[in-house]
Image (cartoon, rainbow, N blue to C red; front, side):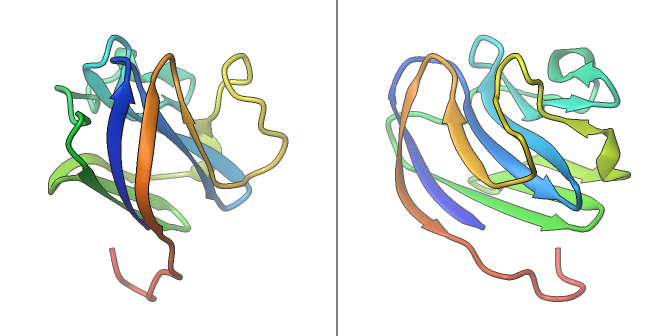
Length: 132
């Protein structure tokens, strides 16, 4: 998936719900005060509790290119060619916290936390076998 996204208001997160198998992962960009990005919750540990969190602010009033690749056991995300997520593992360890997001089954969704974003373009295509 390729997204072109820009911040319209606020300094908190842009979020993408990512179905992976029978599970869901949550991509967080510029979360937790606008400075942490990665997958929301893995094996019960939130993004701000893990060493794989990427620090820095990535979304501004200028459009950014976000590329998301999901395979049956991996998620890879870049924002303007900076890797935000390079995860491989058991999808059942991923979690979308119910107190923040009301998702009853795995499905793609976009969201934000105390901010507004403009999605300038979104291209979704079937993953080619063996590509990353």
